[in-house]
Length: 111
Image 1 (cartoon, rainbow, N blue to C red):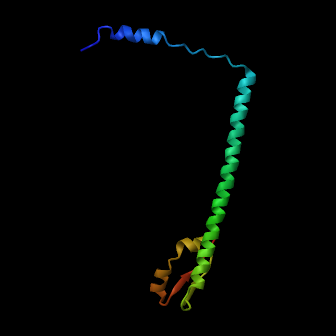
Image 2: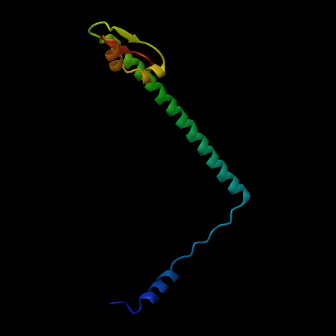
Image 3: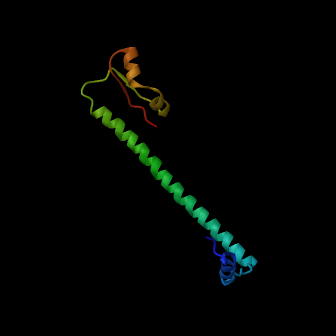
């Protein structure tokens, strides 16, 4: 069943609510808000840059220590030792090298 006073009750409810009155902004307040937003943007960028530098340096340290542990944990000498930069690290698969050339291969490429 519909409330016969349904729409009138809603009108009374909304008319009794306080109306928000907006304050006019002056140029000084607008400049202050824009400057505050700019300072926050610069601060967040500086913090993000510092965090990413830390994260990348930690990743490089991890890779170097991982490769060093590969070398020190060898039970027997490798037949093929691959040294180089990051392109070698990403592009040379020791298992394929071992299959094609015979023997054991170790990829110690970093950075």
